[in-house]
Image (tube, rainbow, N blue to C red):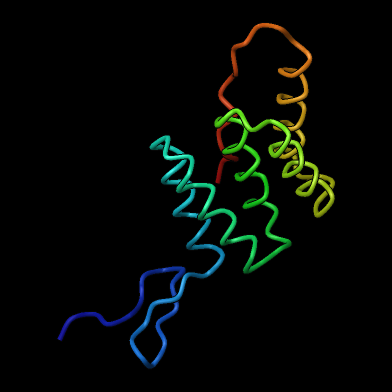
Length: 118
């Protein structure tokens, strides 16, 4: 008989249903982000935050996703929320600074605001 354990980050209930955990939703969001599927990434990061509102990485990644999708006001809100949760989270601070610098410039070019490294 094969391995019946759920993949890492996913819970398997007795009913056989799989349930996303905040970490699995964040991982899914990262995959979609890198494939430039920003709508799907946004959904996964929002799902992770709904399950764990203090998940600073998901807040930061959602900010990066919004920035890449040119939703700068939403990006700023997410980065600020991440910084409120963890004032020392460097990736959120860098993302916030990058969006604010972009909004203050007239270049029209968005630098890559990728999600934080693992």
